[in-house]
Image (cartoon, rainbow, N blue to C red; front, top):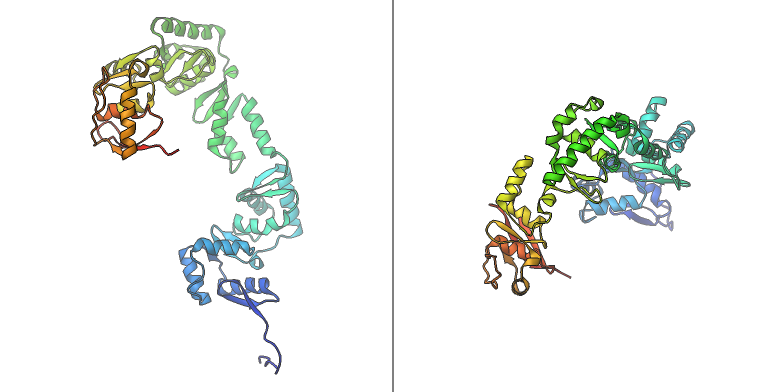
Length: 424
């Protein structure tokens, strides 16, 4: 039987911490948690369907403008995540026993940094724990990690200390004679594969064995005589032609017994030559050329070196020799902007050989008035050697810093562009 309110007795003062849920002011947060759990015993997903359900259950059809505002309100009041985008009150989160908590804390201290998923995996092996997923574990564990810990979305680490697993990883990548990406990822759950590969590729002495396996050049035991054969072959060809292709070296490399461990193909051969020739030559995917600082050059950079002009057919002959894919004219225009101007037919001319000032001024004034597209026409001042076509106009525009070009389409036949004044 409900207690009747006595005459003169005041009703408990009500408030709303969450829109649509009225609770007593004296115990507002606890009652909000309890009411929310009663309304949503399986938790509430903060999406469009969840917002619709929330409005139905609370009887407030106007509460919260969108799912994000609902999620922000739940975050602000300390609601816990029990799955991706799903919230429940802290009252519904299973508690860690002291033994389980000590186990988690020791694990974090041993690793320096560890993912919640790995903690859950280790915890499951040692305890009959009630945590269905890493989100619930994080909600149970984080309140105990106030001092000396940094908690993120996926990881927890000791404050001010470099994670030990990262230290070990950096040591392995920097010093190991052999590296297996698969093994490192398996031993370090949550490790970003791209970050790992970037570190590996930054190490100049590593040679790819294929299949994400790498070996240090010194561990290959490349015979001094074999190394001399490689350098002699490269030097002779480069002196005569200015470059040599990796493909031309393949028969020689295949004959060297000291690198028989390599599963020799163009990729592994290029990797070997990059490590061997570091600082002496530029080694690209299929072309090797002299480089004073060892900077990797593309075959296009090698081709244009020392040329004041070149034709598309000359470049095609060069790429054919390298068995490389031809470069569309539109991509050449973009790659060579400010250095070469396309003549509108089949030739690229070094920009410093041309008097472009009047044409640049005219195009700039036109673009300032309104956007200019590849379908528009303009009567530009004459420049010796240039025929003004959509592609040569684009080539000119890309040499003007105040003009921005938006290019769409792939290949010469579908390429389109719009020129706009660049905002300052």
